Image (cartoon, rainbow, N blue to C red):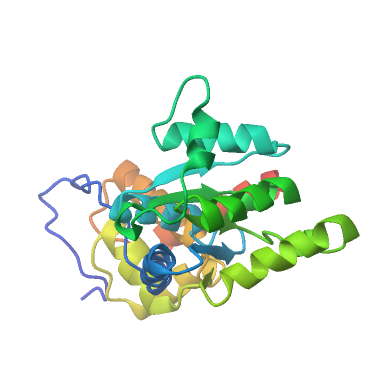
Length: 258
């Protein structure tokens, strides 16, 4: 008998339902961090992590769970562009929108505090980061910074050091670092929801290794490729040859991107 849990051979492989964010341990920690930020005296904090570890997934999950606004930054985004984007996401538009946002005092009711999730915050310069600190300090806005090396790389500039020390002190312990998933979480949150039950531990271990030992984005993409191959072959269960074919596709993709 195959060690892989097989489905009936008479049925076609059914499409999986689109699901919401899968609550890995890192996603749960990110949601907890966001709630702490909203309730804090200094309502600013951060989610950091290496590329592919699920930071943007966490950002969107926080936005959905807490009803916040989300701004995605880009390289070279200026302070003015950032503030206009934040004001727009908070529902303030037209002439004077930024000024109206900055005019709201922090003494307003904490229950009315608005959450802004700033994704790709590592692409901001120190002026943009200082503007976000001001929003959190003075304007009754909770700010969640999401990205890699958000401000540490800018401490080398004497002009910006003092401002960014203030930012770091405001963030304090309100931090969450996304990391690698263990084998069990890779299976639970990436492989099984995409291809179904797999009882062969060798396949599960090989999948985790192929996802660079728990990189969230790699795990999702590899699982989707496994399913695509299964669908093309009419296979009802994941086998080691199917996984190896998906791994070959993944290796080729990484080689092209490099």
